[in-house]
Length: 174
Image (cartoon, rainbow, N blue to C red; front, side, top):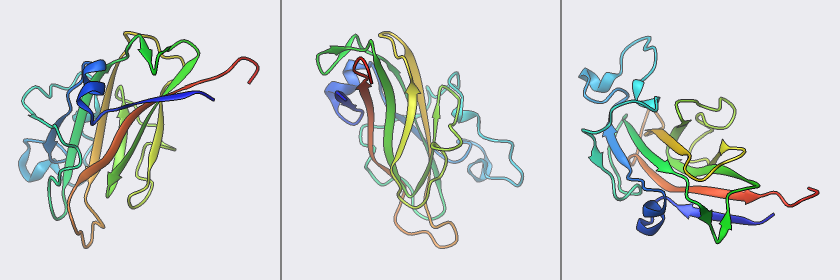
């Protein structure tokens, strides 16, 4: 199966999708106690129309952001290009692949694949379908909620090891 990737930590690949990562601290950034409250109904940061214009530009996903029990949101709006790896998108599927230190949720256009995009374990790679039939010009909002852990005794800090858009083409007859 032919495959090509766009590294969403590489300036040229970010330019190809017209994307810029943004980040903010907290379960609900800007709220008291980072928006961590009992029986929360969720964070609006996962939604594609959430206004992240006041968030910090994030040029290095791998930089350590927060220590202790903490949450950091990372968001990007990406426009799928005409071609990837010299091939048009027709016949491909698009996936988002990442490894979030230590735990993470991945939201694609405000939706979370409850089997693949939720916390999978400590530093576990995640692979989520963005689109089974991507088209050039499609806009995709990717929101990552990263959490430092283990929650009862955290070490280190929050960061994203890698973030890619992968395209896999199905060959005729397969």
